[in-house]
Amino acid sequence: MSTNGVYSHRTLQPSGRPTAGQGAPQPSSAMKFTDSLDIIKQEYESLSAEVDTLRTERDGYASKVESQVNELSIIRRSLNELEAMYSKIRQDYEVEVGRLRLEIAKQSGRTVGIPGFSTKSSPAAIHVNPPPAAGPSAVSAGVGEPNGRERGSLNRSPGEREPHQQLQQGERGREQRDKRGYNDDRERDDRVADHRDPKRVKRRERSGIPFLHADVCAWGCRCFAFVDHYSPLATPNTLVKPIAPSYPSTPLVGHNTIGPLPPMNLGPKGGFVDDLSLQTVPPEYRKEGSDWFAVFNPKAKKVLDIGLKHTFSHASVVCCVQFSPDGKYLATGCNRTAQIYDTKTGVKVCVLVDETVGKMGDLYIRSVRFSPDGRYLATGAEDRLIRIWDIANKKIIHVFDGHQQEIYSLDFSRDGRFVVSGSGDKTTRIWDMMDKSCKVFTINDADSLNNDAGVTSVAVSPDGTLVAAGSLDTVVRLWDVATGVLVERMRGHRDSVYSVAFTPDGKGLVSGSLDKTLKYWDISGVTESVGRGVKREGDRPPISPCVTDFVGHKDYVLSVAVSPDGRWVVSGSKDRCVHFWDSHTSQLQFMLQGHKNSVISLDLTSSGNLLATGSGDNLARIWSYAS
Image (cartoon, rainbow, N blue to C red):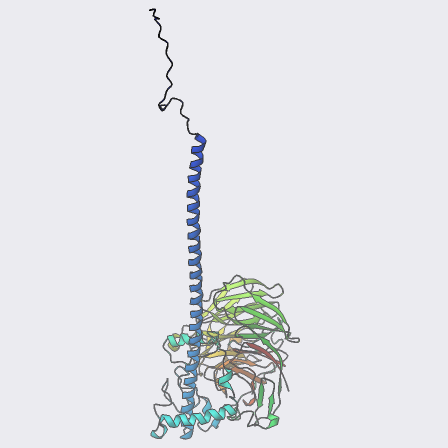
């Protein structure tokens, strides 16, 4: 058998799984990058959702905070309103107590003493004393009653100490009589809290002096008012007239030159009729409008007539009014704005607002004063600044800064060289309109009542040599402008002095006080001394006697003015009335009631036929009067 040396066989095919590296497919690097991007995207979306959630929570918190702030503002306003209500209720209570005590005095036949009057004065004198809590330490020269809150009750006879129920019954009968007369609808209408004066009054209370709250400016405006407030509260009613080459010059309200104020009587005879009301006087002695009335004194010859010309509504208490030197315009001051009206047409021609001041809170304009040329308006406000406005351009051209407390009163000198300001910081300052310098008159009397001598009212004499200032410590002071020396202190008021005005010849000064009276001071001795250059210090015995008292207002006297001819003394009061007094006889000519709240400020035109009033009822009015 033949054999083959080569063995022929089939090649075996691999049947197992290929090992790594033997041609297995590799994953793509692009796929790995895509997966990474997906992961990053998911993380970003998650973070975005979380940010949105946090943003929503933040907005929610911001909304809650804003809501809480608004609620706090509402609470603050409510507290202010409650405080004003409390002040008014307390004031009404004190007034009622005073009325009861006066009623007791009248029923027992006891005469209430009045400084400067004999005990044989007319029954109207009984209405002079304010309620026992209304004045700081009153010193009665009539019968020497005790001072302070308990005056009128410490020395009562047993017959005067009637049971409380009998007092209430007697008072209810009195209230009914009042409602039928002059005080008709008083409680219903006296709704507007005047914030002008209480700011001043409240400082008195904090300093420990028993005092009535006032619902006038700021009152707490508040005014004054007086308001209060608010207090708040009254400015001098002198008008600055165009620059004159020499004295005497163009007559102006409060310090004119059309003859001296005649000698006045020392008694209130014929001054005020206790039952003066629409129901008790004959028809020929009364005049009524749609929302105002005037009652003339039947015991005096009727020589004046009065009528309403314009009414200007404001958004807040009207703290101050003043006519321009030519009488064509009326400026008013209220919360944050000063406004100017055309006295002929009644059209509002200008509104002055400082837009740089924050919008939170109140900023009452306490005093407005036209410059003698009528181009500028000076405003004094609660923020302690005096702004000088260019009326035509509605721009502030200068700001005087220096007072430490709010400004209550301003007045221009007759030649326009300087403006005078009075503040609660116990200073009167003279600001030079040319070089902007300042001269400061500070009240630092050692015997000042409880060291509370905030200046409420200032006025410049007609010849520009004297500055008068009324203050919370019941004193009226006179400074020599040239030397800065205090030349006179006039004491006699039993409560804070809220307004002062020079007479036309500059030899007399009229002051209005919270003791409900006006006083006329003969300052001719001081005027002559200063005119001759004789140095006189204020610590010398006073030489400016009180010649007469004007008695009749039933509440605080907040503003006074003297007519251009010196014939009439005009006063505005918290009793909502304006009184025209005859300066020759000290008699009341008529009583005008044209507001539903305190008459905080008033002014007369140099022409002598227009009267402006500003009130806590948010109204300013122009009245025309004529012989």
